[in-house]
Length: 293
Length: 118
Image 1 (cartoon, each protein chain N blue to C red):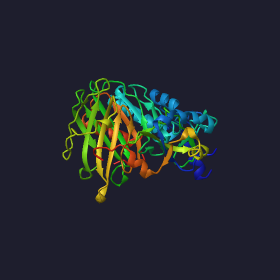
Image 2 (cartoon, one colour):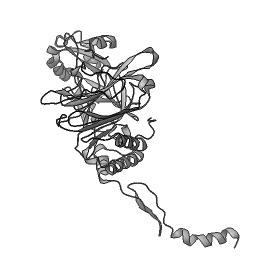
Image 3 (tube, chains in turn red, cyan):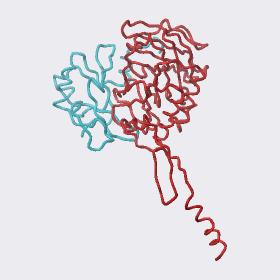
C-alpha cells in the first residue's frame, strides 16, 4: 500500500460519516449514508410570497427570505407593505406588482406601460404604479421609503425615507443625495375624506416652505415625498414625487424616467437609527448588486 | 400582429372616448396580459406596452385599468403605447375617430399641466 492509499483508508470512514451543512434556504437533500444537507427552510411568509408572485429565481428567493427575516427581527413586519420591483423578485412580467408584508396585501398595478427590469420597474412621464391606501393618513403614523435611480444627480442609485407622526409632524427625513444637489425636500399629506392637507414642515436645512405646493400633485388619501434635484451645472431642474396612496409615480420630471427597486410603507414611526438599520437591511439583501449608496 | 414599432402618444377628445373604446372591436388585436407566461390569457386591445427591458414582447393595455388617459390642458386625454397600426391608419379617415391625433413628445409636454415647482 502506497502512502496515498494509506491516507485514503485512514480518512474514508471519517468522510463517510461527516455531516455537511449547506445553507441553501428551502433545500433539504440527503445524499448517501451519513451525509446530510441540512438547510434551513424558507420563512413561511416569504414562501407564500414566492407562490403569489411566481418568484422562481434561487438568488432572489434567498435575498427575499433574508429580507423578510430581517424585517421581522426589526419588529415591523406587521406594520409593513413592500413592493420589490426587480423583475427576479416579483412577477417580472404583466401589470401586477405583488406586495409583500404583514400589514396587508396591497398589490400594485402598472399603469400606462412601466417596464420590468433587473434593477426595478421603470416609470415615465405618464406611466406609474398605483396601489390603494384606504386608511386616513392624518390619523396614522407613517414611514415611507424608496430606492431608485433616475431623476438623481448622475443617475446614481438613491434612497429616500420619511417618518411622520399621526398628526403629520415629520420626524425623520433621510436621503442619499448630497445637500448641494437638492434644494427642496418635503412632504405633504392629504386625507381622503376631508381632503385636508397637513404636514408642511421641511426638515432640510436648505428647504423652504411647502405652503405654495401644488395640491393637485397629492392624490386623495395620499402622502407624497418630493424632492427637487439639480442635475449638475446645466441647472436642469428635476422633480421626484413618491406618493403613498394614489400612486407611486413620477410626474412632471425632465427627464421623466425613474427606475424603482423598492418602495414601501409602514404604519409606525421609525427613528433615524431604525431607518438607517432598515436601509442597511435592504442593501444587504434585496438591494444586492444595485450599487446602492 | 401589427402594432406600431415605436410607442406613440395619441390625443383623444373627451367626447370621443366612447367611440375609441368601440373601435377596439373593429381594429383591436389580441395581446397577452403577461407575455412571459407562455399560453397565458389574452385580450383584444388597441394598444400594448413593452413588458420587460431587453424584450420586444407587448403586454395588453386595458382602458380604465392599466391604461388611463393623461389629462391635457386642452381638455383632451393622452394615451401612449404601441397602437394597432390599422387603427392609427384610420385616424384620418374613420369619422368615429375624428379629433384624435398623434402628438409629438414636444406637443405632449407642452400640453401637460405644469407643476408649480418644475
